[in-house]
Image 1 (cartoon, rainbow, N blue to C red):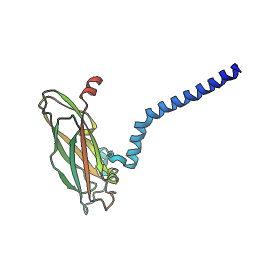
Image 2: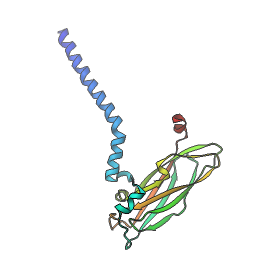
Image 3: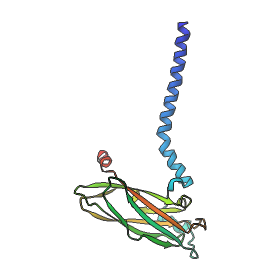
Image 4: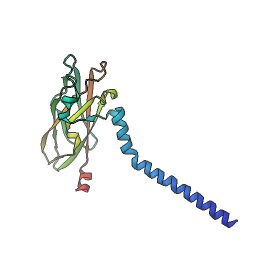
Length: 184
């Protein structure tokens, strides 16, 4: 009787251990899997990244069509930076590379590190909006009182559905100063 109970306990322990390992593995892989899923489907406004040299070979410029690209910037709660686009919107030919800038100013008396998280609306447009250079690819460090111009180069894929005439690129800036200190 004690031997069968001991065997049942070992089986239960093995099952629980498998579940714990599976849960840990799932949790560990969740973010990379989510990012891949969003890049493939365009869900959650994730945009693509392309090499600027490859754009000419990859895209044919559609000179018969214009798409309006709007720029919106928000600072997350606790992020005191003033960030503005140089232009609120531009009209672009799909397939052609465009460049613009955003200006960030740190009005505080301390050095800070910020990270921009982009999204595109409508969601269907996100898979057709590709950045070749973006300040959102890296963390931005601004000294106390410093102001900085940050470049954005992008292209709208000519395969963007014809019914999408306007898309909005939105950035939310987060204060990642504490996390950046921990890494350094």
